[in-house]
Image (cartoon, rainbow, N blue to C red; front, side):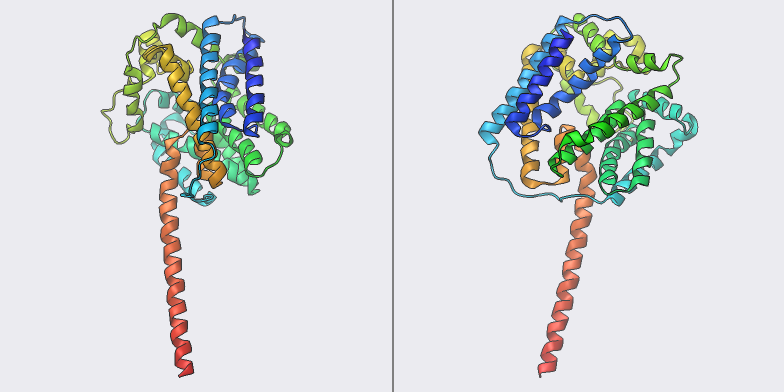
Length: 390
């Protein structure tokens, strides 16, 4: 079934490319995490570790994909041609993002003393982050900014900055951040530069392989390199295990409701609960791992809705995800701003709104100030001209 699902993924992305006239489209972006981290990861793991397919994982994954696809198609044919206005800036200054990154690193500096400024130290901090560390908000800020800096540095040919960012991407210890950086570059290449993705396959493949290899090889596990890399992709077997344990709808919405705590940084409110959202699943089924600060990957976009309300909630939530993804895609197509592109690629990551907001305000103040200066100079010039004529 794993090979059949991979074939379904490929066909789905191919059909979506025909419908949206682009490989980078609402369905491909929404389906990509499941495709790469779950199914391609399972395929890689099969080369080293013995494992069997799970009918539950495959069936729910198919429902998830069909629901997303339906949402994308519905938006395209009912709302896809709606006119929109331009609200946000076209791009953002690389220097501004570097300052945001520097601010995050400065706020995290007390942890560097304890965890050591090294690959293992950053990986250790990632485990601290998963354990609800008070500094996790700054880690998340840096993880959101780094892929944007990598994108802008790559296309502005600032290779020294790009190399530095690649090192920091490895140090974050999180494969999703590396994936985002690669995704941003590929999407920008096709949607903004209007170039074929095939031109990037070789450098992107080498970059992904190098970054993942460095990240995993610098971990503290005493395994062979192949075992380390293959063992990294265990989401499929984790999903199979938890889907056999949970009862559909057993949490009655507690996961979705309590997930609102994710928007409140512990840095500002230390009384924030440590167990909320998807962590409720880990607390119930893997309490010993959670006590050690470890939460296994279970692909929450599928497992959490099933545990909350059941199959119908999974269908509804995935359908809405498809609608939102298509909305953001068309907003970018009509506005052509980096802001909408990042929201589309990240699945409406609110951190980008927080990052862009100060820049938008500061740029507006600067533009208004420049306009006032220009108007004053023009007024003075008019007065001088009148004096000359008199």
